Structures are given as C-alpha cells and as structure tokens.
Image 1 (cartoon, rainbow, N blue to C red):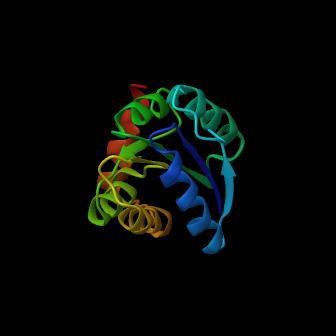
Image 2: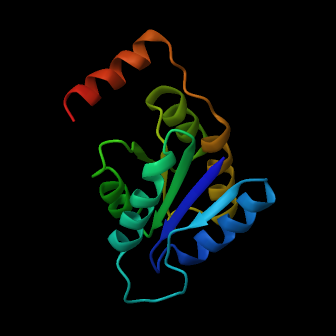
Length: 147
C-alpha cells in the first residue's frame, strides 16, 4: 500500500519520524512536503499536493496529514469530495474511524500527540478494514449523495 504524507512546520518532525516507521513496516511512502523545516510554510500547500497525488490511486492508497492542531489539515483534506479525513488522538478512535467511517486520510495533531502514540494510531489506521455492513455503507452513501 502506498502512503502519502504531508505536514507543515509544526508537523515536520513527526512526519519525518512516521516516514521511517512506515517504510520500516513495508509501506511505500510518498512525501508530499514540506521536505524541509520552514517556519513560514503553510499547510494547505502540502495537503493540496497530497490531494493531487492521491487522485490516481486513492482507492488503494491512504494519506496522513499533520499540523499542530490537526484541524487545519483536516479541513484542507476534506475539501476533496473523494477524501474522507478524520482527526484521531488515540488508537480506538482510529479503529472506529476506519471501520465505521472508512476514512482514507488520517489527520494528526503534532502538538497533542507523541511520536510513539502517532505510530500506534497510524498502524491501526493502516491495518483496520472498513466494516461494510449495511448501516455503515448506508451512512457513507448518504454523505456522498450530498457532497
């Protein structure tokens, strides 16, 4: 599975640690920026890059976006009607977001999530399948109808 990852300056250090962790787990990792620490950068630039790169294979890939609060990157990622981004602070939330809401982009808050916690959350996000039982599928269909 290919993982697209993006972060601004506040998430840069966590992104770099996650890239190593994911590559060590056998994932192909595509860095959508920023490729260097720049305290003047803006998260929408990197999330927009991730959105563009994920277009071709969003059915078989996943994304991870990181900023200080996780909120800005969530908003930016969800501007694309084909991405479902969820901000997760713990493993159970990540499991539920994948299983029940079929998120394909994980948002992380670098100011509120340790590196070790982020690794565990990312692992759950990547390994949990969507539960396509009727109630969850129905809910997603309703969202898609009004997107």
